[in-house]
Length: 297
Image (tube, rainbow, N blue to C red; front, side, top):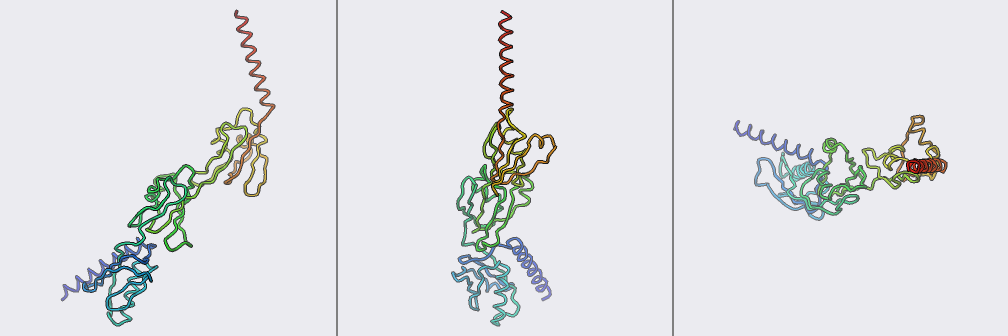
């Protein structure tokens, strides 16, 4: 009898440990209609049953009426069934375990700035980088800040930032559950126009999704030799304001560099005076060369 009691206690602790581990690892993975559940009770193998959660969100339980389990974690469902068995005076001290054998919702949806958006079949929770890989990976204009919408819980999205540091990106991963939706937004774009070497729009794809004036100018290949650095203008998308700035002073450290916001425009004007000097210098150099060649003859 003593041996039996020790074995029973050991088995109970093992099952409890499994239940706690399951609860902590699948803390946000909720039971829904159509899921197949496995209900077991310690030391009562005859009470083992497998059944599908009904469209009403209920689970038929042997010996009592159905118990509502939709929207619960497996651990919460086990507690609800335990209470139902006790309340019906069917069992006095049942130790109930609930395991999801198969989830009815087998897809995760990946939308936004990935190379192959769509719905992908999964049967278990997957790390978010695995799910992004299913969608072909991030495209060149993807924002680093990603949202995960939990199945059945649109009001509490999960935020995840894809760090440029690979180790940090892996370490900080969140789990994506069957039925979840992963949303990859478009990164902010800043524009560098005017007398620069590569005018155009550039995405803000660093870790903080930010870019400063000098960073944007560098990405655009720097200012041309004829640029009028002292009269550059920053046009803000937020309030349509226009601010004159001296890129030359910022480059020399006389004024602080500051960040641009998505949609802002940095305009670097053309200097006719510099162009005249450069053109004149080129003309003088060309004339001198011609004269040297002529003299040599």
